[in-house]
View 1 (tube, protein in one colour):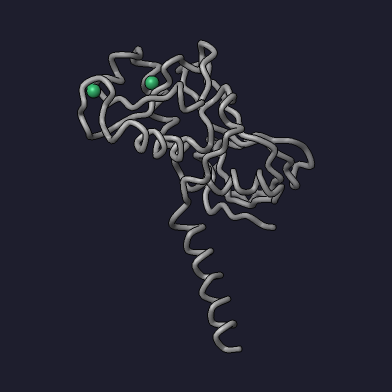
View 2 (tube, helix red, strand yellow):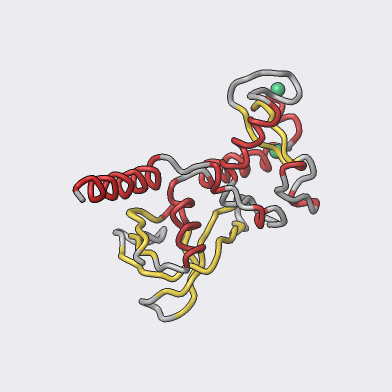
Length: 192
Ligand SMILES: [Zn+2]
Ligand SMILES: [Zn+2]
């Protein structure tokens, strides 16, 4: 009896630990292959490509600072399928892109690998609500928001041609669909 209770608690704790500290490569989701944006499982895809090609640049064999690169760019109709992805070191990667495109890539790579994206993806797949504190550029402080997420979109800025990764969903406060920049969210949690 005590053993069963003990084991149950152990596995529950392990589940929690894995959830927060050890999101596994099975976050890889085949249905993101045809997405026309950077997928939420981008870092899981990178792990799979490292397993396939080794931890080295496909051009010069360097083994540090590797980026995952679309052979046919998303903007030219390429997808996120593993066949269209390869590893490049930063300098080889720079040579294949123009500079503004490249800074956009850096921003996306930084945000897609974050824990927030993993939580959002989890909420999306379970149909859960999430809550978070949010600050718009002109706000002086954070406000609590609860939304039911419906998807992730990229919003282009007219000014600097950069892209912000956003989540859209039903906002319970506004009683309407709203879009929120993921980088302006903090203390995100999944509610149910
Ligand atoms: Zn290289
Ligand atoms: Zn690239």
